[in-house]
Image (cartoon, rainbow, N blue to C red; front, top):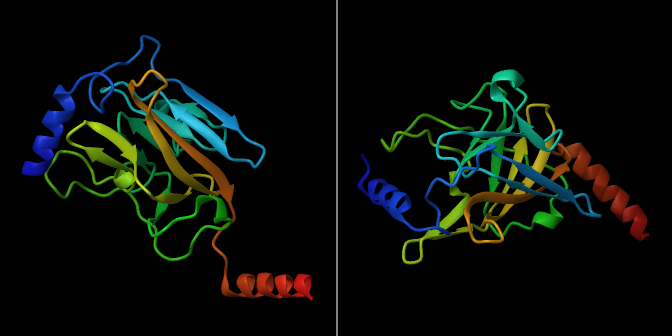
Length: 209
């Protein structure tokens, strides 16, 4: 097993309340909150405190779904700090994700990018887990055991064929308890074709004339 990951796992499993590790699952299982602002940005928090159960999330209704009953009706799932998508080795829903990590401007994204998208793939580092396409969503401080969202924006193609942009905002609730990933997201247009981009440029030029 990868030595670095082994050390990381030990730290996570032995660290105190408020850090990334520890099972704090409530008796009633997972929960979710969704709040939409005037610009259509949805702020979502998932109770993913269980170390045993995945919480399955659907963008279309901004809610939790039961994997056993939903078939391909889920898009994202969370277990603690791990996110998996319904695509690749983690599911058959066709979800895929583009990773924007070069000075991403969340508010400026109106269309999904073209080019290659990623899916979850088989374990490559012998840590016993798949290589989750969104695993780089956080930075971890070994001195404080605190997790903070990385400067990255994701664009996902959902099971319904829609596109959403997403950024992670936090991993802790108001009391500092870990296992509550929160993220902001909004639907965006599909990737523009070259003709679409030319049409937009012409429209902008006409508007400025």
